[in-house]
Amino acid sequence: MSVNCECMNSELMQYGVLPELCALKLFSEFSELEVKSLCQGGKVIVNDHRKVLFKAGSKADFFFVILSGAFKLVRQTLQGDDAIIHFSGPGDVLGALILTQRNPLYPISAISMGPSRALKIPKANYSCWKDNPTLVFRIQNLLSNRMVSLQQQKVLNKSSLQAKMANLLIELAELQSTNSQQTIPIPLTRKEIADTVGASVESIIRIMSDWSKKGYVVTNDKQITILKSSKLIEFMGAEI
Image 1 (cartoon, rainbow, N blue to C red):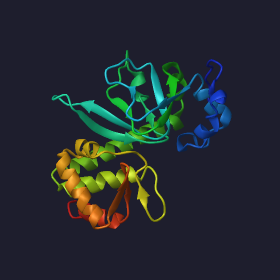
Image 2: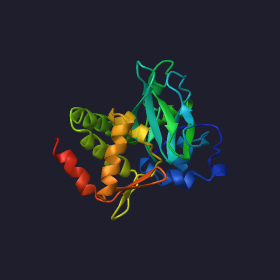
Image 3: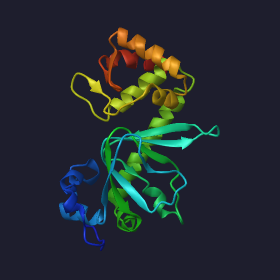
Image 4: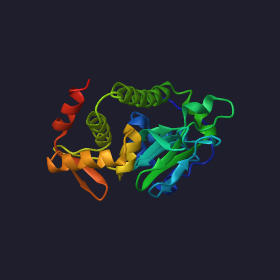
């Protein structure tokens, strides 16, 4: 496949992230030269825990490819609270599709979950991204996955709190897993779980404590490992 895009001299090599980008599924089958061309002018943003990558309503002059860690995508409710829409991990693309709009604004905020890194790419580069059918398809597929996640949450809207929590934890664990255990690779507070599933912090604490005692999950310094995913899936299966 070919990439026809003339941009400024790339700074990717000085950051040493070109091999990292090439390893992402997003750029599979692309050559290093093609990836370098697509991401020219990109700068690596290193965020500490809970640092804002971009804010809802701000001018969208850049789009982002997540390199490591994770970001929660949030919107404010009418009450001024943060509603968590989605958790995005390595390889996800943020703020790209809106760039075809006139004077685009970010519709959501992106906040880092633990130390996280993203490649910040100038808006001008998207002109060659949107003309590449493979990239457009893959970005749309990423967006489709978010929609599926939201639909699943909608399906579980009237389900038990245990079913909602099980769905969330399993989904997050898929960002990174081992053969026998699934560890959620981001620091996740009880409040963030509560904000995502629409419950009180007290209810989340009660269920997590019960699951810990039964050996379904184990928590260590805000990191959650699922020990018995089959038990959590049972909660979901009973509701769907």
